[in-house]
Image (tube, rainbow, N blue to C red; front, side, top):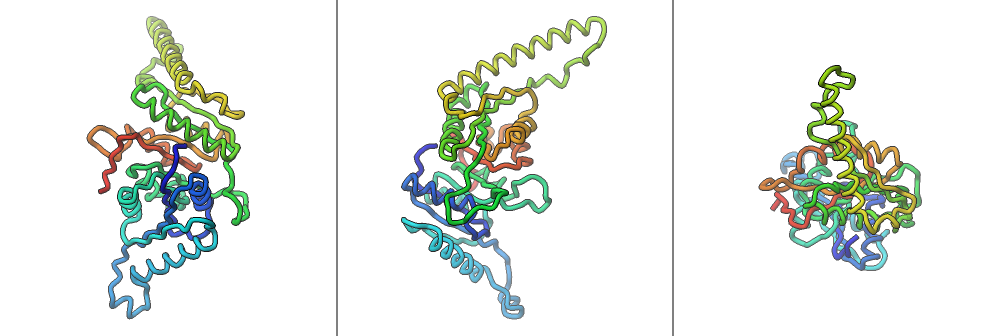
Length: 319
């Protein structure tokens, strides 16, 4: 992982010492980085009349309560350099991204907030941050096993680096994924696995197996073409991961055939992965959007913690 200078922990209304919080504190100590603890009060549009009639807390009062909660969290659990505390009013993901742009944060960590529909792991705020935040975003799921809150953050058992090895323009980003995943795995003494999923764009049009007549020859030709494509992806994965194999620590390289949005979560589940490290990319002239729907589909249904990187020239649509 690259050297960190200013880490932002976004509580998102959770004021307990979550694993994400403890990891933010530990990383700040390790890198001697500044630490900011932040929360956002969603604009409620409560009128003064309603505040007076029903004794409701207006946005300012809610912000003061959140600041008091952050203060207690910092005073109780942060030892050493005093973190900066920040509470704003607005749309959470927009306020966080503006803080990153204004203050130069190089990593955002936040705990997972369960989705309202009960499906998948990442809620709307997480998805917005993963799409649009200009720095890496680490969304951390709480471990299922209880853990003392006064110790170091619970370690991951398995880290999975999801790479696209066959695209030359993403080689630099792929190496950043590998370096980041290897660094986290080494710190947590976790197994590191590298997964590259591939699929030919025309596979859905392959003829059915066993078709008689001239179709058999065509089927054989297409199958041979698939084998050649698979070999190209295998060679690209070997090239990209050169120098990282000794850091797998019991893990392996996995070249899997199929839709990446389906295969990567399946591999993560099969390998008992706790954290997926991947990258999000933007289309030309469409900042903040993923290339195609692969990453979007993957993140919508993933159930592990996620650390998402951005390319160096990524421009956030939030200003």
